[in-house]
Image (spheres, chains in turn red, green):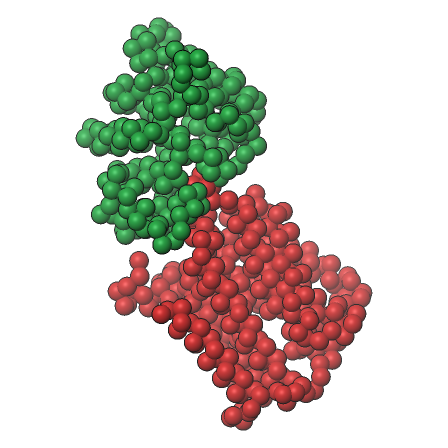
Length: 316
Length: 245
């Protein structure tokens, strides 16, 4: 029954997205699409981060690196063959999945804080590489001209919003599937005690590589439409620390042990950030994240989902 | 007494295993064998290399020299999870439960990963094992909140869930009361009756003497004695290792 209700919600939300963008059931300010796009992008990033960070306990500080590689894969495809968005997304995903696999392979002996530092270092190395790569514009960035309109959506931003909505549903569905599968239980065993997991038959190396690959793929597809969205990609914005920080903060605030956590965290924090950007200042974003993160780490380590479960008297 | 010619089947054969940590030699050419269905006690003073030996057998550490053969297969280069798949299970001296999971979920990991139990049968099979071990009423409790004795039980139950041929129990009784020691001993006897070969590492001599059919003694990385409990306690070298000159 639960399975049905998840997919029912997924279809309903996708249908609502289609109704808004294709049929313009309600005519809304175009800015809403721009803002919602960013929130949905964070839903994917937070969900992707959580597969490694929440389920398996491996904290990735390099989310911005994956996101940017996703975005720059699109830039390359655009420059090479003027590829359409629907080609960019899977290609970026695969590039980042391979990047995740490589990172997993190189860092598999590292644990805890050393793993976190290695991921951060990887993001910095990637940024340096891209900054010095003339083909994609180097430090000064590259323009990607998106079409003004696309049928049947009308304005291209409506299309981007719809695509991001579908990708977000896909990412959450993947995370939910992982969480409920044998793989997810293996991840939890690794998080709780890696040696005990190994000695109870869990192939920890394979599972770790699988986690970095899945997580990388999802971060890649989150970054793929970025070039089309902003029209101009440069290293400083694509590798922005905000992506790394939000990818960690959103699952922590939402609750890192379930697929619902990053979803709730990203929707909430992402929306607050967008509202704050418009009403107060864009510089306030990180401050809000910081304050909320400190609060949640101290007062509700299991996040919002954990708090709700506690209030209901359910859960563990 | 226990060679192949007498009809018993050799399950584990450790041949001249060496393990060094930097300049320190923790195991210096140790030979050890266990036959199918046997109950072997492995004893020795603190720091004699017992746990290092188990870590080498289970694959948590790689031996620097020598060979470990299990069911006729050389274990060198095999990861712990592969050895568990082949039938070596262990418990840990300091319990390592999967702390965010319930007792039952702890067992589900080896049941799914080693015994390939379909998800629908996991609960039933786990409850079977928990009944045997005496943890059934704790099945849905969070494993992080168990008492010491129950954590030891969980260690054994989780090792059992991997349906092993060889169970290595690493000081499962340390720090337990006399009654609790008997409880754990009963469990180990029960498991042995079901055909599981057991290596028991223990400091509690009463338990080792009662349980073991054969005892091997390690001292400073070398095997100094190997025989029946009576032979071993009367061995002058064993006495020297424990009591000094």
